[in-house]
Image 1 (cartoon, helix red, strand yellow):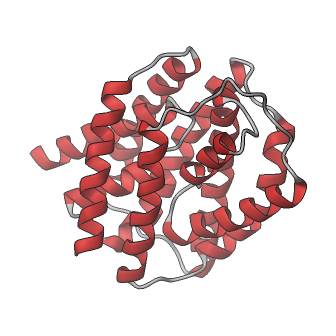
Image 2 (cartoon, rainbow, N blue to C red):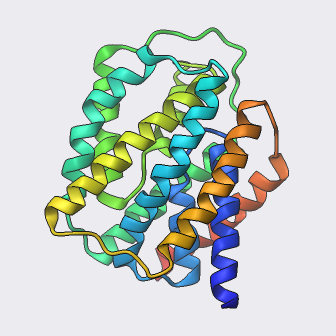
Length: 243
C-alpha cells in the first residue's frame, strides 16, 4: 500500500510539472516506473494512457489562454500521426528500449532546467523541416511510449519557431495525437498490457495535470520543483543505462 501511494504521489507531481509546460509527462511517468520497478512490458502502454488525459487538459488550458497556433501544429502532426502508429506496431528488446528511453529522458531534463531565450523574433517553420522532424519524433514516440513533446518543444524553441507559450500549446496537442496513434498501433499489433491499478494512476495524473495546466497557462513558475524533478530523471536515466 505504501509503495502504491508513493507511486501515485510521484505520478501526480510529474503530471503537474510537465503539464505546466505543455507536456503530457510520459517520459516522467516512465522514469517513475523505472525507479519503482514496474515491468518494461507494462511501461509503454501505461505511459501513453496517462499521457492522453494530461496532454488534453494541458492543451485546453493553453488553448483557452490564446496560445495555440494551428499553422505551427499542422506540419508536425501530418507526418507524426502515421509514424507514431507505425512505431506502436514495433517491438523492441528490453535493452534497446531502455537505452532509447534514457536518451529521451535526457531531452526531458534539458526542457525542464534550460532557460530558453524567448526575446528574439520568431521565424517561420520550413515545411520540409516540419514534416521531417514530425515524422522522426512520431516514430520514436510510438516505439517507446511517449508523446514526443520532450523532443519537439526544445527543437521549436532552439530554432525560434515559436515562443514559450505557443510551444507549450502546440506540444500538448502534438503529444495527445501521437499518444492516441501509438496506442492504436499497439492494439493492432496484438493488444496492450496495463497494471491493475491503472485507474488510480490515471486519476492521479489527471489531478496533477489539471492543476499544472492551469498554473502553467497563467505564467506560474516553479523552478525549484522542476530542478528536483530533473534530479529524479537523472537517477532514472542512470538506472536505465546501467541495468
